[in-house]
Image (cartoon, rainbow, N blue to C red; front, side, top):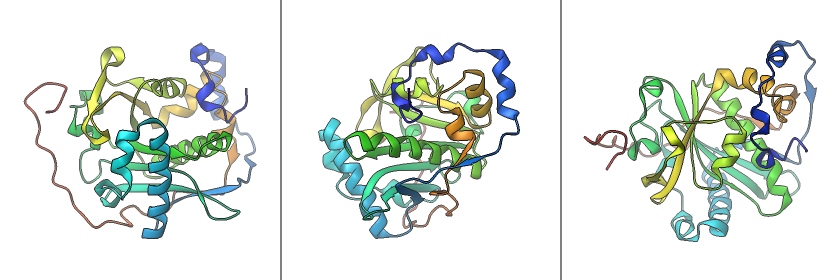
Amino acid sequence: MGAYDVFEVTNDMLAIDLSMQSKATEKVPMAGERLPFTVRAVRNESGLMKAVHIRQTAYGRHVPELAELLRVPERYDHEDGSVVLLAESKLDGSPVGTMRIQTNRYRKLGLEDSVVLPEWLQNKSLAEATRLGVSGGRIGRLPKTMLFKAYYDYCVYEDIDWMVITARSPLDRQYEALLFKDVFPGGEFIPMHHVGNIPHRVMALEVTAVETKWAAASHPLFDFFFRTHHPDIDVSAPDAILSKYHMRRPQISNRIGIRQ
């Protein structure tokens, strides 16, 4: 199984070998690897429109009713605390993948328009990954994996406590393989306002625990993430580069757990 086949792995990796815990702290020389594309934060409207194009095309393959709403940038793209990542081919500059990261630095996460997060995520710095999209074919696997690594790197760079995602079925299994855990008991699928009211499973992964947990589980992506330097990933750009709007926080529902 190749390191890039992140979404093909199964729960077999969850069998913990305690002797592997020391692997996370080993002093191992960092290997370097170049990519056929770059992954950077969008800095201008031209880059944003590339991200919008690949996003709309990707969603059109699986969720066409939602894709129709993604032909133009969303307000979330311009918010303070949001970063749009774009993977671009070095050969011709064409977009091959995108992801948006929204932190709760300035406002609550988009998913919090639909649910009330449990106590263990309250008063924590959070980053939600949304609008993941890659080009079709096998080339999509590598950009997808690199976008997730960029997501993790960004969370480390910004001192984020928890990575939080919402995933529809069957894509939720991808995040199980990455050792995300359910935010709500039973892995309930809840309609999410910010993703077209499609039922999604809410999952989270503690940023500071990723390296140790993956080492203990002998995760196939461990060396790729923690023993390989990818200079073509750059998450150092400040957020709110495209900030134009400031959204009002949603009102909190009186219902427990799910917002109205």
